[in-house]
Amino acid sequence: MDMGLKGKVALVTAASGGLGGAIAHGLGAEGVHVAITGTKADKLEAKAAEIRALGVKVLPIVWDLGDLSLIEPSIARIEAELGPIDILVNNTGGPPPTSAAGQATDIWRKHFEAMVLSVLAITDRVLPGMKARGWGRIITSTSMGVIVPIPNLGISNTLRASLVGWSKTLATEVAKDGITANILSPGRIETDRIRALDAARASREGRPVEEVAAASRAAIPAGRYGTPEEFADVAVFLASKRAAYVTGSNIRVDGGAIPNV
Image 1 (cartoon, helix red, strand yellow):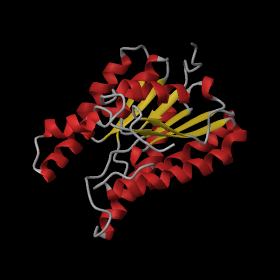
Image 2: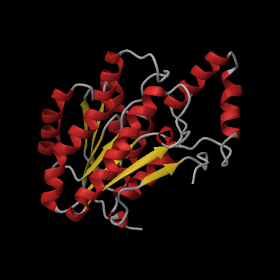
Image 3: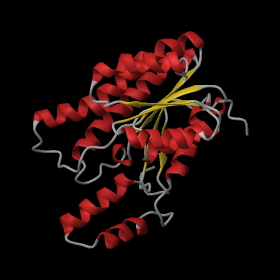
């Protein structure tokens, strides 16, 4: 199937590894030139080299999403070196496990700026160009916690849920411009983030981490964790010309784990 993506330009944030890295690789495999961001230069360059081997241009940018002053110079650099951004994949790191109650205001503010405000501001920066060209894709990765809140992930559940309402509202505003906006809600995907969450739960409950992970897998109808590549495949489809009539959606990639209709 021709995804119609060859020669497009994408920005994938938090893409030195994990889900963002897999999405960037998947887009590169379809002929998309990709800008990737992260906070560690060595990991970014390693991922960039991997994607360049696919025969596309890759621009790694060291970028702390919590620093909103970096948005304009970073996107200006992408436009100068790769071209206008056609595909924006909003991916952010997750906050540490916390309760919903009792968190300091400064903690909420720090993660709000990195996980929510940065997404809104980056999107607003690239939207005018997408509108002018009559084509664009905005994909925002959240968590299954926006559908069924996950215990002990109070900050993540709260902040990521706000992106769902934003994306749905945005989708109705830009559909006439040939732009789609969709949410991806990953379940248990085999990444360092999930391994860290399993380890944190094991520590809280005084159980071996292998036992915690086994119980988590057993609760998933598919009987396993997903792979980053499986998650990326869905993102690549949403970015493609084939998905032009899919917008305002929240698509679950969870092996059937979420019980809600």
